[in-house]
Length: 184
Length: 358
Image (tube, rainbow over all chains, first blue to last red; front, side, top):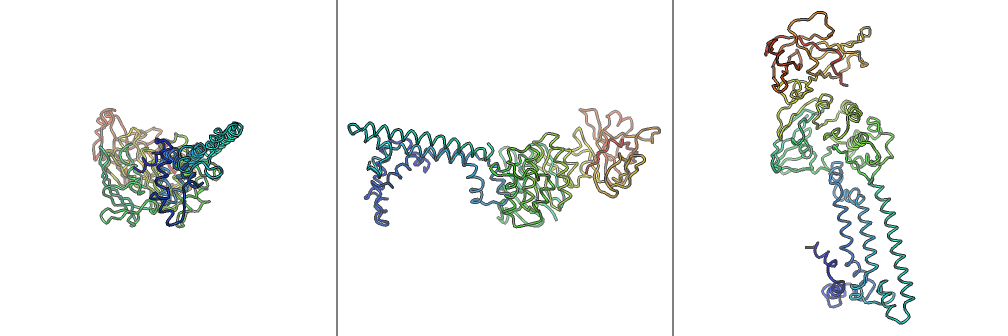
């Protein structure tokens, strides 16, 4: 059940996710009104809203590699740690997380890359306010709406390409070092 | 003191009903074919498996008892386990693997230097597990288990995945481990040579049940035991070095209430060791032969004869003052000599046929 809800953003159109977020977290929505009444937080059309929208959208993408890498850990190692006196939390930090590190890294990079490209959910839930909620693709899109904005769009696209390439190379290097560290 | 395990557990297709009790300290060897439930005994003992009904006690401390609802989790049992596949943590160096259990132990008798020395792993401390050979890995796993300051060390076929050379490399360390520390050991194997080398108490297990248990010297030489049914059946006797005869290059051992001559040993007089006498190295005679190269002519009485029809052979169990011998002869010879319980015979044993185990 929780699993299906977490995976929902993967199959729903992003605009629908953004609209659902707006319903939930809007000042009159069930969570949004509660946040406003108790903490005075108004989320809609803020950087926080853009972050939340990106987070919800990329969460299922991150979940899969992380879960696969945790499931891929030899159960025997966990049992061995138990016989050596390690309790559940101890084993999580000394055995499970270090061994799942490559998968967590892949999840993080995938999530970062996907968040950079997030469009529909952000524009619906957070709007496209320059310097506040405007993501890179939103900025490129609005630049293209203005006559003569191609130069700006090209520069922004270059930034996007540079970020993506740097991210991929970094992930590859880090991943290789991590796998060497756990002997794979 | 003693080690007591009793449990019943149903797997799809088989139900295990194991009851075993063995004196401690000492080495208890659990012997049986693959898939007979040996590893389940290990899992129950360590607490990694919670059977439908069980009672586990080590030296009087009850660790699990379904009747009173007591179940001590594995991390609180202080039972060190060495698995067949070593299971070193791949992300930690050898030293940090060794210290994993040590850091979580309440303190105890095993010091890092002593264990590292005993196992000869001093040069490996900075290495990563995946750079070690199979034998080295297994030695590190044994060290890691020892340093967790266990009250009982359990080894689940630690040599099964190693080739003969690696096995020969580790066996002496295990024998040293046995004598160096006063630690109870439960050792699981399906290899008869490991039984002969290590066991004090032998527990035979088959299809989820204990079929026999007792001191090794009694159990190994019973002609009707499953151990004797193997092609390399042998008697194992505790022995003591009586005196050396350097001029003849022989050493006299006392074993089973008799004197055995073996090729000269480096061990000092009075040293205790054990000898393994393979059944096919023994010739059975009714009268003392003359002009023969055999040094050991041991009188005894036939206790039983078990025929192996498939191989046209017979296994003769011969009782000495204090122990038993097994002799493998042809079925025809057994009939010609009229070997039957109660018949006095002479066991002729070549000195070079006796294996002296440290």
